[in-house]
Image 1 (cartoon, rainbow, N blue to C red):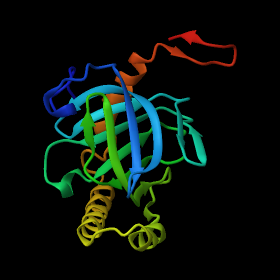
Image 2 (image 1 turned 135 degrees about the vertical axis):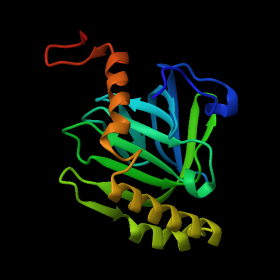
Image 3 (image 1 turned 90 degrees about the vertical axis):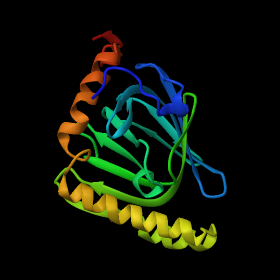
Length: 202
């Protein structure tokens, strides 16, 4: 873990630790998908990390979601398209799952805005430790209805297989040790959290 921002956001334009960022996922064909605000946490050898405190509001056309627990997310750093075609979300204890990895096109930073195309497939580690691939039926449907190019189909399939193997092996960055310092930093940065009696300082 580093204590300062790195060059990967916006190809050399640093994003300060603690700065608000905007995440805008889309579906193929520039169709809007999940949108939400988050907090930039920093970078390490695995890529860029950002956090979503419990209570973060997320929305997409026809759906809304409020994060029930803190989440930290990893955007892979420099590398091949295969190595970078995912966004990983790690949930604090009490969340609906432990790890949720969206298979995407390689994420792109534009200043403090982060975007990627969601390619349907997800690799999930549940709270019991069970690991599975989600939304394979959606991927099979969308490759036809959205007209995914064959190179995108191949990239998504290969990335999904790669991530499934890494998550199953529980190696970095999909081990608890890799995300733990970022949860600690997020906790330190979020100084005002709701409580049953109203907001309080932490």
